[in-house]
Image (cartoon, rainbow, N blue to C red; front, side, top):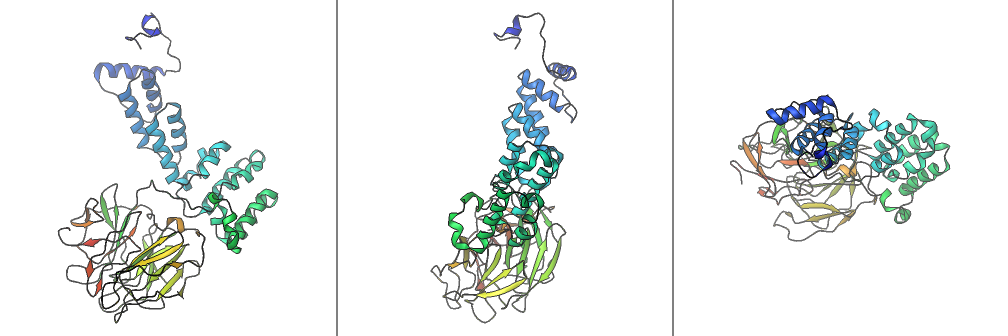
Length: 468
């Protein structure tokens, strides 16, 4: 400004509009002594001054300071400030934080003060990290009720950007349809009827707007990896559960399962982790327990109809499917599905072949089973694809492959490798372990007699002392 060919370099006196005097003094002192103290009181004025004076290093330092202190109560304001100051990295970081912590952000005063266009943009994002669409509905309703007279007429436009068909039918009937703001609005009632038809008349689903039935996909959030059960070096089944944070590169022990389990099936539904069946060192198991990461507790739920280990486990439409496995005598072809809402296991159409330790995955509403062991030899073919009786994506299905909420971690000693990614120090030497969380691409199976490999619907990894 003062040395280049700009107007200010030819003036004896320069008026700096909007510049905080204390910030200017701090920046001038920095130019002489190289020291600058950034705190919550001066960071914004320093960033504005650094931007005005083209001090990029100070601007970057202020952006880093704000990025490291993002919170559900300030992230919307930080994003707006970053946009004003043209700080692209800070803007992107604040945006990602808002998407990741949407539920907490929606309870803040900043959210309630947002203009309509910002709320519409936010609730339409695929990246929102929510357990169910019901949380988005509650956030929108809270925003409208904050200034009911002015915002009430905006409700139809807001509801049209919520994926109401992905809400539970009971929630639609008991909560959405009964709300007084919805009941007195014809357009809102039409949207609720459309969502109910999605559940009641599957043949009409192709005619619904695609974006309203598309599950949100929060891919920017670093997942956590849960190591569930497994075998120690002596061959004993374990009840140990540990969680790894790839960002912090640390492990922490969780509360152990009530039962030791190796070759256990693992699934994540609605933020809860299910440990299904497995082998306790003496018997194959039919029991199931579920882990809540918020309370660090395990709870027993309804047992399967058959005992099995090394089964394939996947989640489709909010239901858990277990395919095949080994019952201690032979590989199985039977398939069961579990409903978390009713706590009930149902036997469905069996596979065409007996399979244990098969690869299982979900693609476009179908379950595909490949490979495995039929009791005599390794199977080298893809099995019949199973189609869910519910062709929609139910609430919670969007997070079947996503991480559970964060917990602490613990330094590790042994190694686990996940499809050639960097090594993760596992606190205890274990093999036959089942990993849950995600989103991570499954690795190939490694044989552990008498049930070769690990089930393929979850994240799989081979563990050996000293690494692979």
